[in-house]
Length: 195
Image (cartoon, rainbow, N blue to C red):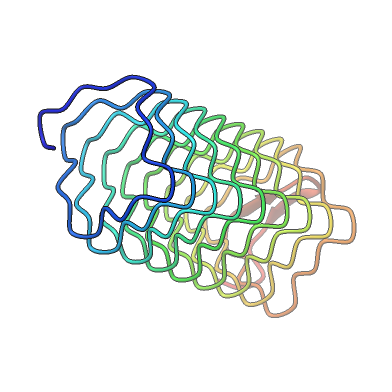
């Protein structure tokens, strides 16, 4: 399927395990509840695609374009999303434990109640993202931009916020027990207590 171009194609509940979709173009396609274990999805165009409840555990999606995609309840545990574009994606209740998202664009993404423990978000762009109720414990957010993000009811316990920017972030009932703050720009000012 490497060269397949298929806007709006249907792969609902399909078993695409081990399939190479790298470089393919699937804008608006439906991968609802698809099994994609060990699939290769490098630099694939999945803009506006529906990957809700799909199993993408451990898949390499580096450089993929998932702008505006629907990933509600999707399993992205241990998935590699280095420099992927997830801007405006709906990722409510997605499971991203131990996922790798350094340099990913999550600007304006909806991550309400998403599970992101031990996730690598180094240098990620989370400006204006909605993380209401998300679990981000033990995550590495070094150099991440969370300007204007909604962090209401978020657990940032034991996360690393070194050089992160949380200017104008909404932090209502946000927990930060043992969170590393070093040159961290908080809504209240810079905190370097953990340096």
